[in-house]
Every structure is written in C-alpha cells, then in structure tokens.
Length: 350
Image (cartoon, rainbow, N blue to C red; front, side):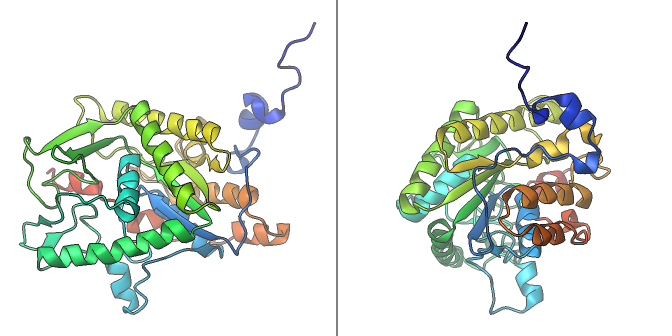
C-alpha cells in the first residue's frame, strides 16, 4: 500500500525538520524565489521589527537604500531625528492601509485633510509620523513643508528599489471619519486630540488587508517593473489592544490575519516572497528563547538567528562570504534603540 505522504521531503515533517534539529540550527526557509546580491538596492518599511532587518542588512554589507540620510547633519543629530531608521523617514507603517495611502499620496495626489497635530508643548507634528521629529515644528506650515520633502524621498524609494521589504505589523488602527486616513497612533496619544465624532477605531480583517496589499503591489509594480517584494510579519506582540479582550488574544488575531494575507500575496504574485522571521522568533521549538523578559521585545539572539537564515537562503554570494556575514558579532541590545510609535500608548498609563 502507498499514500501521498511517502515521498515528502524532510522539511515537511515536524520530527525530522524541527524536533531533531538544535534550536540555533533551525531554518524554515525553503525554495526562495530570488536571490539578492550586493548591487541590488534594498529598501525597507513597516512596523518596529522592520528596523532589525534594515540594520542587519547594513551590517552585512548590502546596498541598503536610504533616500533621507541627513548626511548634512552631525551624526548624533541624525540619530536623534530618526534618519536612516527606514529607507525614508516615514516612521512606523504598521498597517497595509498606511502603506497604500502613502503610495497614493506620492503618485496619485491623495491629499489628507489633516496635515498637522498640536502637541501638549505647543509644537506641531505630522499626524502620519508623529514621533519622527522629536523637537516638533513651530508652525503647521513647517510640518507641511517637511512632508513635501519627505514625499519626494518616498517616491525615490518606490521607484529606485530593486527589493522592497515590508513588515506587516498590526491590524488595529484609528482613522479619520472625514476622509478615511489611517494614522499610526490614535489622536491624543502623542499629539492631536481625540474626538469620537471625528475619529473611529478599526480592526482590519483578512479581506481588508488583502485588498490593500494587492492594490499596493499592483501599483508599485506599475511604476517600478523590476521590483521584487519580500514580506515579513512582525513577531512583536501588540503593546495594547482597543478591543475589549486580552491583548494576547488580539495579538493572535492580528498576526493570524497578516500571516494569511502574506500567504495570499505569495500565491498571487510570483515576484513576491515571504521570509518566515515570524516563525523563527515565535516558534515553539525556541521555547521563548528569542524574547526579552517582557515576552514582547525580540532580543539580539533572535534577530541574529533570523538574519542567519536570511543570508543563507537569499544572499547571492560565495559561501565563504555568506559564512563570514552570519558570524558577525551580535549587535548590542538593538531592541533598546528601536523606534516604536506604539510604545507611546503604554507610556500614558501609570
């Protein structure tokens, strides 16, 4: 007698590919769709975890595309003002809707009705990247002027990148009732003022995120035919949920939706791939080894493991160079310097 599972490969069997493999050697990547070499321009965007990916790419010598580098500023000022955190200074793009609306603003003339929020100290900030400029702006016009310059840089990212890496982070968001604009933070958390008649909470479902990601990918390919996209899902749990339930339950919902959509994009576009950093960090095989004591922040060991798998499978280099790249010393506590708008919610609670 025979059955369809007789001929499956070792990596399709839990006992052989997970249970019998030492934790640090576990590698769930199979059949990557393309390779990346040092000549290709790589851009990143997304949630907080995307910053780990961008930093490691720079450390191992990839051509990381930075359209807003702040090269004319002193090094310490560049750091404090969040230059180089992502390929452009868009801050955290937690949701697919944010990414799509940003693209439409750059290429299709989308104009949000709200252009500046006031902080408690009287300074103004960009509602769509409220923490990107720590000192804020003196006037609303200064915010608008800065955004115009920012959008030019974002356009360069979309047009010039050979590989665009996007980390899906959240499904929960707040949006304007007047024009549907989605913000990375609720009004009133770091700036602006909450008004239930002006803003509403939304928790995107699979159909919503699928639609947003599909539209974005189609639009991106139309303006940049050579681009390839690599999707990841952030393994960082929600810092808070607005749903009336446990934040752990909301985290499971959110990550499940995002993981399903990533799979659907993989099936729909042959130039899109999925890198399983989420599975590497959260997998039961690791026993929580890759999180800090708060069970939320990803530690250096986890980041290093994910990047070893990335280099091994996606980097087109001689084996000795790939081995050298994976043997780089661990960065010093990278999570402590990760820019995460979402943390502002927690800071407001005693």
